[in-house]
Image 1 (cartoon, rainbow over the protein chains, first blue to last red):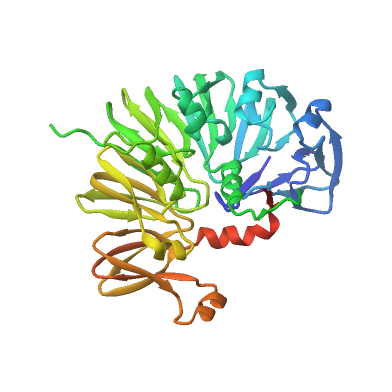
Image 2 (image 1 turned 180 degrees about the vertical axis):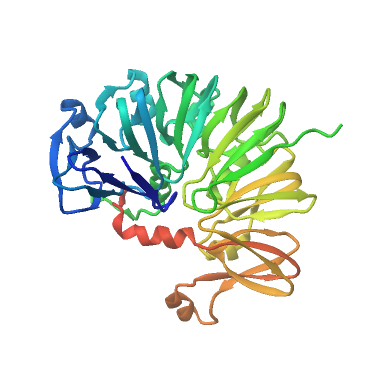
Length: 221
Length: 231
């Protein structure tokens, strides 16, 4: 499928040309514009698990009817869009970074390891994409691809995606004092061989900063 | 033999800037809390209120007042390692080499430094308090490298005689400059309604690094949309 990602990395924006009769699946709400022959239907995906994650229960399916068409897709946060072409491979995405995928890929919602979901703050679920096709994902800020050969620690708030062949667990950084006071807390430790995608900004850091600008009201009681 | 130093590599400038700090064996990086993005290589992490060269709890308390975190993280590498640092707001970063002279860094602009830089907090007096800006600025000295961040891009201004910068736009300045904080206009009312508030008047010779955007202006814009805290 032909596609282009423009205005990288700050305002990345994806345009996909969909050939007649083909389909593309997109995160609900991420479609920005499209040609008139594109027919949209909502697909129920993931069920109870997706309900628990707070994500939309639906994916939007776009099908080019009659002639070729195009869809432009803009994710929620200002930032970059990444692309992977999978050839009978698997990639895991953090639940907020999924953008779109083509036919031939299987979309599944996976429970994270209990400790990972509990401690990482990155959510309980991962999106598992497997099969053959294209997948797009987004990050807040720029996206960076890291080759993990042996071991690497990643702040979970920066984690976007990782390939199979990597195993991860959650560890605390430094001693117990670091756990509470370092401002870092728990980090994901990736081991094995594969690729990890990270985003250069994290939403929670912005929110933490903005928290300082909240008004303070006296409660009445 | 001269010891190898940390190599700071900036990527994705100017809006999504991160710093990849390449540490040679045995080198220590001191960084503010919450800035870590990724880490590669064998590194021991230690969280303390002070730097190796003194400080203690008081230093931590003072840092808190400057808008920085109370605790500092020390990353010491056993072998070659990488520490990736980022900032909360969109903006640029800069590397500053200290060669004995002092640099004053605005609260919030400090990201990290190597172990040859000594950072301390400096009370800027009542004039600073009145300006609504941070009470403390960070004073950095020694022979080493400092990593600073900004909101927006950074522009250096070579002051030859006198120059005026809005207090919220200051990233850092050389200590060779004298400064005084005052209202933007001679009249209090004019200063207030103009929204310019307080300005910093630099005198002497030296460089001021300014940031294109003012974080507290942006934060103030958000205030009406944020749910108030209850006390």
